[in-house]
Image (cartoon, rainbow, N blue to C red):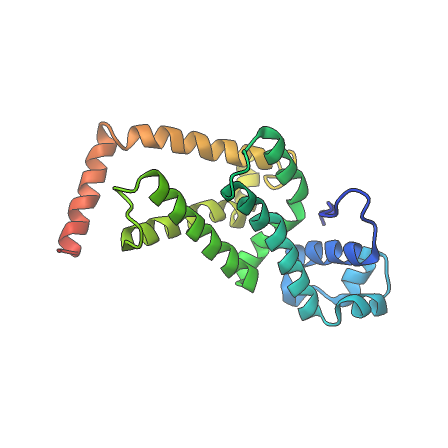
Length: 220
């Protein structure tokens, strides 16, 4: 089990320890496989204290969902509101979110509420990105924007869901704090070169063939 922490430095409260233990247990064993007893053991507290702070396992998952939302989506929201994406900002986000990312990877497979929220908010952010940068190609409220943004969100989140396969190919743990930045770097490299490829040579021919096929399947 991964024993990383999502707590801010100095936050040693029992509630925070329990939440971190729950994040790790849910990520490792899933909601059904995790138990209150195991979470209490990892946190170093009694079952009674877990129940005192969170009540039931379902309520504990709700608290984990809220924390992941604040950690992952909150960071993305700060960027949307205009905060500069500096190396320091990204480094801080990676350092803060390892447990949350692992939890989210399992949630996306199991289909928990946070997974739906993450996907929907990611797709909505992608819609804004597309319409703001290429308004002629992606006009607001067009079905093309919604579909393209949904695929973009799925592409990004698939790197989390498939982290075990990525780790095997990387030769190291892909979701570790030290390697999360490598995922982003690899994705930017792919985007950069695919963008060049799709507008020239065979790439442009494939793009045209797809467009022609789409036109036949969905004539205006």
